[in-house]
Length: 432
Ligand code: NAP
Ligand code: HSE
Image 1 (cartoon, rainbow, N blue to C red):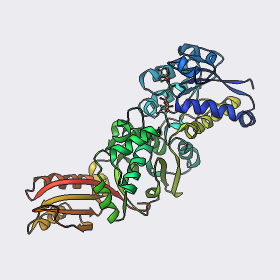
Image 2 (cartoon, rainbow, N blue to C red; image 1 turned 30 degrees about the vertical axis):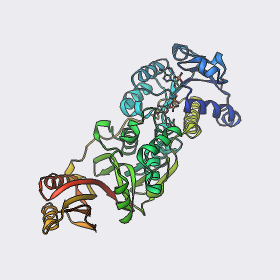
Image 3 (tube, protein in one colour; image 1 turned 180 degrees about the vertical axis):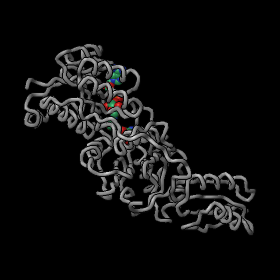
Image 4 (cartoon, helix red, strand yellow; image 1 turned 60 degrees about the horizontal axis):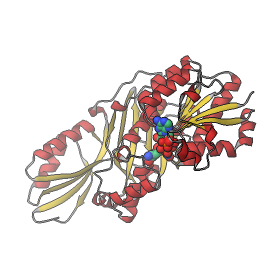
């Protein structure tokens, strides 16, 4: 086979890692794919910035057509980010019969279906292993390793920034703003960290995981999303007293033919396999009917870990080129999507209330829960927080989302309930 030429869109954190791995692993690549692999051209916005940093200027361009229209370039590696313009570039790449490897979860969560279809129509591969959980080979584990099983539950810590923040808040009692700044300095956070802390980055990754795991086209608007900006140090400490660890968890569950996908700050029982995942690390817990519980752990971001997944995708494309089977592994979802309604989603809940410190209040609250068929697993008695205000922490047994939300509305209407301080989903320690 002739030399394989790669066109790189972007030379930032991930792009520079891809260049390094291709350079450093030439022998291994040659052995795996049977020909030399080289980066022929790289798209950037500012050539001077990169050439001053030691990158060969003749390889750089600011004109994307020099890559998309170069007949010698076989594979495009897209690591520039962005959505609309990037989508246009990739569609043009497929029409020009170029295979694509991307790390872009934002693009894949929004336009993955269209891009995969266009790739297949043009006999091109589109691989995106690096788009979820950086260096963890989770997409290939789901689509290949577990392909013989029926996956029923995927839970993930898929955002490194929020895991870093929650770990530091939990371990050192560090202030939210201070740890977020640290995560930005360490390079885990997105340029605008809103999508990290508000849960959107994790939601996009869960769209990709659920679509592949359940073989149905899950969209971003199907995911209920809540970030970590409302999580307080107090909540984390109360959770600890009850044997829970606070994590931002993406949850995708399949019951029968129906699916639910959500991202929210969650109290995990300390015995849950995800509870011990610390700092910026990611992990994805996958349950299949046959295999039972599995967990995949590793770095969810960073230059070389993410580039490792990209170069593994490149190897897969190159092997497909050699076998002449490009475009056939982009399998379209098999099942129609059916979403669960709120009365079909069950979970335990943690609730912290400030109530009037007077006789009969607790009875009123418990009877409201009882009217909706919800009982309690744990109740924490706390000293009066300030004059005439007492604090109650409750953990429910499994309840439907609908019943729990109805109770919250009615609690708000009780004059003796001064404030609903916080409410979180609770997940226990093993397969549900
Ligand atoms: P980055 O460091 O900001 O790098 C982006 C690169 O793309 C820069 O070289 C930039 O060039 C170039 N670029 C951006 N827009 C461009 C445009 N319109 N035209 C030409 N060049 C453009 O980003 P990154 O962290 O490497 O992330 C890249 C992608 O990987 C994103 O989709 C991200 O979500 C995904 N990802 C990142 C990580 C991670 O750990 N960083 C992990 C998993 C996935 P200039 O510098 O000249 O502007
Ligand atoms: N900002 C992302 C994170 C980068 O913190 O996980 C990897 O997608």
